[in-house]
Image 1: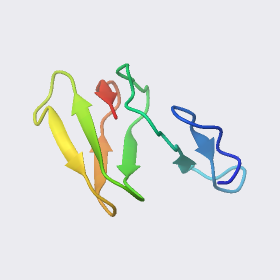
Image 2 (image 1 turned 180 degrees about the horizontal axis):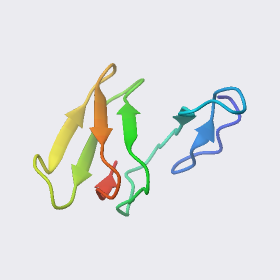
Image 3 (image 1 turned 120 degrees about the horizontal axis):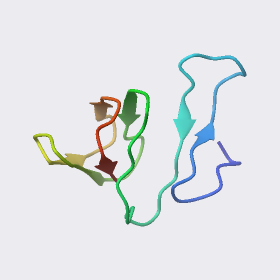
Image 4 (image 1 turned 135 degrees about the vertical axis):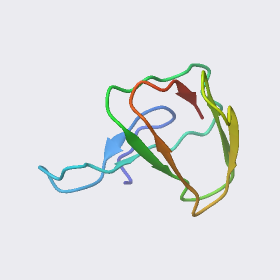
Length: 80
């Protein structure tokens, strides 16, 4: 995890071949774009507080605290 590059970079943190592979992202500033992934995602807020915004689904906004987890279906635009 110490090798994670910075905001918006997802660093794989499991052993090679792990499926699904957990990734770490250390965003320090709000994401200025919506991300659309081809695969389902599970977001886990590890530290600090955050907010996730969604397009085209409700709720369109969720506040996040450490320990929160959010399932994001494939194709759903999201912004942290």
